Amino acid sequence: MPQPQAAAFESPLVVASNRGPVRFRRDTDGVLVADRGSGGLVTAIAGVLFESDATWLACAMTDGDREIAATGATTEVEPAGHAGFVDVPPERFAGYYNGISNRVLWQLHHHLFDLSYLPTWDAETREIWDDYREVNRMVAQGLDAEGGRDPVYLVQDYHLSLVPGFLRQLQPNARIAHFTHTPFAGQSFLGVLPSPMRDELLRGMLGADILGFQAERWAENFLLCARDALPDAHVDVRRRRIRIGDRTVFIRTYPVSLDPQPLRATSRSKEVKDIRKELLEWKEDASLLVRVDRLELSKNIVRGFQAFETFLHDRPEWHGKVRFLSLLPKSRTDIPEYQVYAERVREMVDMINAKFGGAGWQPIEMRTDESYERAVAAYGIYDTLLVNPIFDGMNLVAMEGPLVNRQHGSLILSQNAGAFARLGRHALAVNPFDVADTAEAIAAGLEMPHDERVRRARGLTRAVLARNPVRWLTAQLRDLDVARGIASQRAEDLEEPEGAVHLHIGDLDESFRRP
Ligand code: F6P
Image 1 (tube, rainbow, N blue to C red):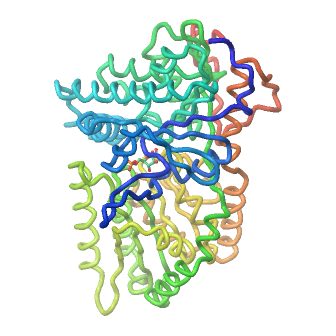
Image 2: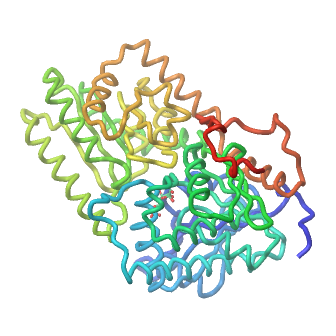
Image 3: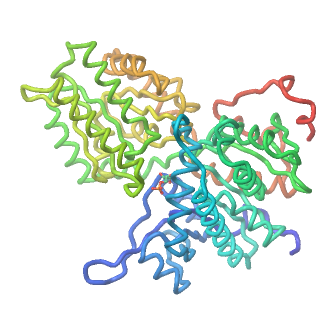
């Protein structure tokens, strides 16, 4: 194929992700209806992509999706784009999605395995790795079929790590960016994978021209993993590039951002106003601590409740004067680890309510149904927002809350959330494993003097607004053009990554300094 003529900025976009912007189901009358796709990835990028002549391919996840996939049809998505599905057979999907993506890669990238007894790799692991590989190959074939207009390919997330490699085999000249929305495991943790799988994963990602991450520390982990595992890769950690074969791959940071307009519009909607009123009546004069998370292992919900228990134990003066509203929609309920975790969370809540509650006061109110409107209503009125993930690629809750909060609410933020690089200096920082420290942060957040609250809340809002979602996309397109020599990378074009860690080149082995 000839070199592409158009700049990436002017080219059509073809996106691939596991979950897409729509999913289909048959309603009670048997009619096929489309719902908006859920999840942080869709929220973060849908608006940006569909103003850019984009086609979005996702894996068929429901029977309705598979019906659409079988016809090869695409759906129009507002304001200007098409969404289609790759027809993944259910028996492959299970091994690819629940098996490798969520029980292996998610756990590794978030450092969740309790290594004293998990994981163990066996023959079944090899079988589900085959499923993962096959689904990735199918997605690459689906992308290849969209290649007629010489598009830019934007491949999303850990589900599709092998897609860039397969697509590169099909189209040696394709322009491919892969973006990881989660953290990326460090060398030791990625090394828990059997080495053929680890190497296949890294090589698959290196099929891209650009590898994007949410935060500098995840990009750096990738560079160090590749340096460790792949003897034929020339890894330049300082310049964040890897030479492999006759290609150079750029490893970059593109932090996702929020579009404030739709969030603020939701916050002003009648439905949210009504819920906000209800919540204000329910909480009466109590101060309000809030958390909003999927009921998910990486979110550190159990330690959050342990910290609240410690806080109530150490500060009896707060009894009856604080409520902890925990909005935790269920997630991945088919996976045994998530079922056990959900039970543990429920037990903690019951224990704390029984231990400290009474006389008309229940310290924790937990809701596990999905309601975006309730979350936005709670954002509006918290005194303190608790965001304490074990590890998190970015974390949008930490950005959404401050944008619509009306109380100059304080934010408790884990040092291990990607968002910490942007928001950390205005938040109360916590080590997510340190329950005593988190209990102190809850007290500090609730007792913060008015002037400090106002100052920090202003800092949080400005830090969120300083970036916008369009920049996430355009920075990748610009770097693709640089990679192809269509644009030059002048010093002033280079963004200083958020929370950049400046490595000392003296620490590195000579062989890794090569350009
Ligand atoms: O990496 C982030 C993400 O892809 C989000 O879109 C979503 O919140 C999650 O990971 C995946 O969740 P699910 O398995 O429900 O699609």
